[in-house]
Length: 120
Length: 107
Image 1 (tube, each protein chain N blue to C red):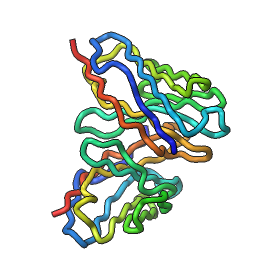
Image 2 (image 1 turned 90 degrees about the vertical axis):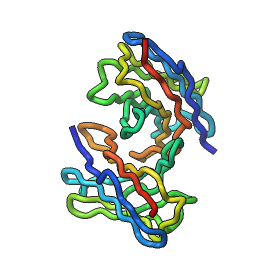
Image 3 (image 1 turned 45 degrees about the vertical axis):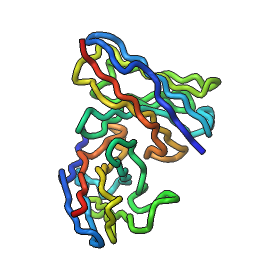
């Protein structure tokens, strides 16, 4: 059974850097084709893909947020970390960790999500 | 950027069929995937590769794609199907793109 769980601060101040950790189980990020990434959802709004870390060390980012994002993985710890710089109130959202299986271009399953509020 | 357009809302009576559309340029040539998100919960994959159902998803959920529109159909709608539904594609230029979302209300 694959599970993912997000952790990180619930509140960050404007201009600060957000660091979120996804800890997963039930699979290995060293398995060919597998990826783990992040999707966010502002309150009452649609889903937005942010970034993906692949088994082969490749990384992909949303074109609109590329300059602010960095995703890293620690295969030995079964963790993926997302950092987002220069946080703004519009970045207030629930951030989900997602699993992408080999040869897939969809996400399944998702973590429970963590709400991050950006406010001074 | 690639845009996927969904109707904001769809209302359906219990026992009837709900149809949720997802429109985008040349969407008929790429695979579309669908997620269900109930209030306060994380999204759940209900359809992948246009028509395939993950294990555990009822047969009442089905998908189709033709021309510039993909459609998620929910037959014999139940109160428990009330949720937001999102389509999603992978595009070589924009990577992963989600639709605008549709709120399904069961009357």
